[in-house]
Length: 146
Image (cartoon, rainbow, N blue to C red):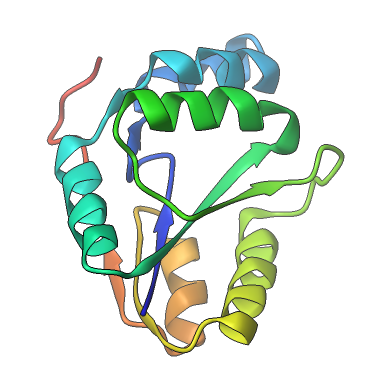
């Protein structure tokens, strides 16, 4: 079976760098991602689901040029995914548009999607509209900030 999981706010604790978007811009926000703490509960859950033979797709809104840094962070933090889907370098579509396209592509190749996990209400709405069982994290970081 297939699992879909978000990166920011699900596997990575990114909330501490959100203010960088306004103060320094998106490049600074993405550059700082290497300092994100993992959300250990979700990293462990995904690792367990992966170990049971599930295929894991991780969807991130980060642009493609940040793939190397993202893959490195995932490896350093024990994040087990099979496929990392990222935004194209000059792709400025909304997160909903990106996720809708990603889910459509996943549904074409996946035999069955068991679960989608995200913190974003809009992302979860995309999964629900596609008929996917969805788990929405309401406070993935338990109020903690790194």
